[in-house]
Image (tube, rainbow, N blue to C red; front, top):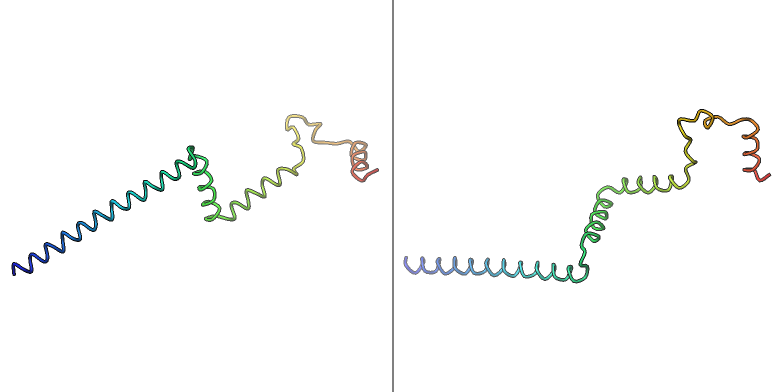
Length: 106
């Protein structure tokens, strides 16, 4: 009975030592990774922003496509019409004919 308890106490002590060693090793690896990242880029905000953006694109690719389409559409959008100017909403027949003639290459 005493021998069984001694063996059990040895096993528990060995497991405790193993757990402490693994935790210490894991903290050391985490510190090593943090040191490497800190040395490569002192300002981590850009890397965090890039990582965040890439993760968002992986999780919701259609949102990224929609954002790209909105940016491209903004490049080809016609100029805005001032809402307060009533004359800006309407174009005379002569101005319209002149503009269409220029667009047609004439």
